[in-house]
Image 1 (cartoon, rainbow, N blue to C red):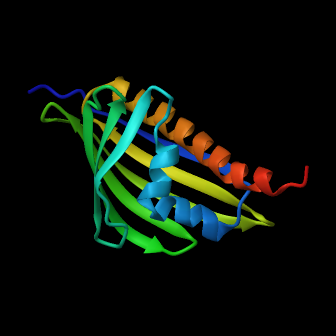
Image 2: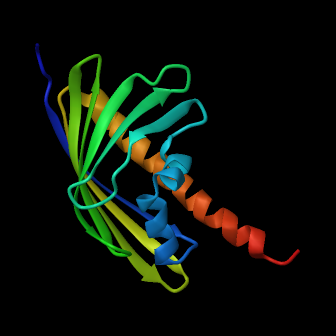
Amino acid sequence: MDYEIRHRTFVFERLCAAPVKQVFAAFADPALRVRWSAPSDGAVFVYDQADFREGGEDHFRCGSKEKPQYTGRTTYIAIIPDQSVVSSETVEAGGRKLMSSLITTELEANGNATKVTMTVQVTSLFGDGMITGTEIGNNAALDNLVEQMRAPMERRKPS
């Protein structure tokens, strides 16, 4: 099997209109995480197993809603509640490993909001396509997270 190896490091930053505890919960709780993880309306993110603790693993499927073509595993390396999550992720399709990454997510209080900084160090075994997919997917997911965190704040505003 031929591999086309590529490497890239991305740093994504967002400001969520919610306190750190609420943003951390959006990462820790798979029911909340699934709401913002899919990068588009045509995509889906499904957890078959979720174990958010140091040494724990999530097993997931993602891709098109009709047929999620990718499977993956996230392993939690270090978790500091309300501060950071360090994890590794491997994604494959059809029995072929496509990419692996090391992900560091840091949360920092910024008044009543939370600054989210996510550093993703990705190795693609499938050329530039998985690098581009990683960038697009993480940007979209974090945009969705910002929207999820904004929605409860907007509902509390007086009319």
